[in-house]
Amino acid sequence: MFLFIPQLLIVLSLAGIILIVLRRTPELRFPMPVLLRDFENFTIKWLRILSQKLWHFVLEVKELSRKTQPLGFLPKHLSKLHLPRPKLKLPSFKSAAPGTAEFFIKQGEKLLEQGEHADAEQHFIKAIKKDPHNEQAFAYLGKLYLAQNKTKESIETFRFLIKHYPDKGHYHASLGQAYHNHKQYDKAISAHERAIDLEPENSRRYIDLGMTLEAKKHLEEAILNYRKAVDLDAENTQAVIILSEALVKKGGRDEAEILLEKVLMIEPTNTLAREKLMQLKYQTNN
Image 1: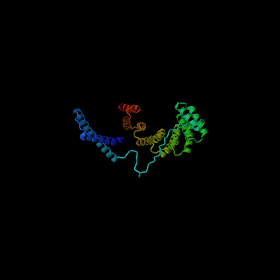
Image 2: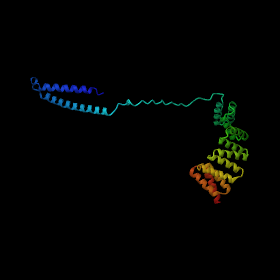
Image 3: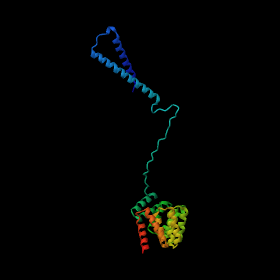
Image 4: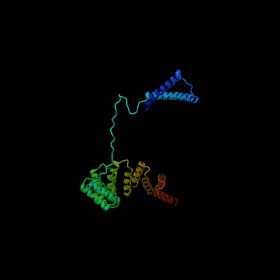
């Protein structure tokens, strides 16, 4: 970019030398008009200024070049880094092949969303026929039977799942719910206790056990489990409301009111808690 600067300086220097020589040669001296003399002085003045500016500019460029290195170059003693190219992971749009267990499960899921429970059940059964040990198909079928209150079918389904997946607490909890619906409370309690053993930090497991104990008229034990659920998850407003209802049955209205007020502090729009609190206050005043 600056390669022309040295040549320009040379040209300007030569022009200045020639002009000086011509002015100082006696035989070439002749009277010079005033305008021409002024122009000559003006030209010499600005040539000097221009040459000085150019010279300072060249010095600054050289100094800058000395302090910096051109971009894109590394010292020879440094090895080049060869970074691997990042692999672009695209989502898989591969759908299940028609006629497979996965295909029938996908179709069953869609039917469940549409409320077509009977057709969904048939698709899950078809999936099981294709793959007799398909966990997902059995799990969907068991949930569907629970929702339809088909107690015998749900018990059979979740017993099968527990046999093959004994360490999954939610299957024991679902079996306990199925037994509860069938009013087989002792078996339901055993199933819920096993679910708690597998998932001791799950507050829902204590609520399930408490409700079965309450159904069996063991209110004291039920309240203990409800309290445990609230201790594990204080913001679980459902557990707090269930505990308040059990306390009212036991005669603990004051504590129930305090709990319901806490629920409204967490969820001011909780209409169920507000209605129950108003009922308690009305009964207390009367």
